[in-house]
Length: 171
Image (cartoon, rainbow, N blue to C red; front, side, top):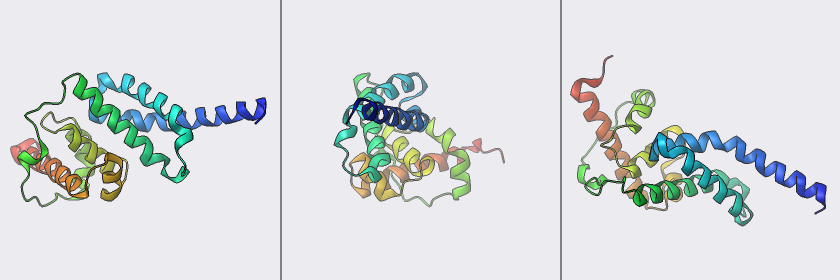
């Protein structure tokens, strides 16, 4: 590849990264919080740039970048001890009937800010409801079994239901 070809290649990669940065920042903010979003996003962007050549299937770019973002978020939270050990998704699991999807769509941003929600549940809710991934795709991105994704989703929905049952819903 000549000098002009290399420059076009670099420009294309930079354009791609600029186009996905807002989406990644929104996701990272939902998992790690607003204060961490800029730093974690920057780390994720550097990792994506460095490893992009290893991605052999361009169609998998979007799930791949969310996998990198998820891992970096969880690493950030664990390093800063901002992932409470006493909160586990399985502790609150119960049989849950999903609230209607309109309510979830309307309240998902507020739900993602709920301090009772664990980072893994936040990741599942953000990937599924905000980014539109199917549950099997979420499982692949987070590198966990589908059953774990379903339990984290149920936990998040149970939190939402408790939030509304407590009278916080002012409809």
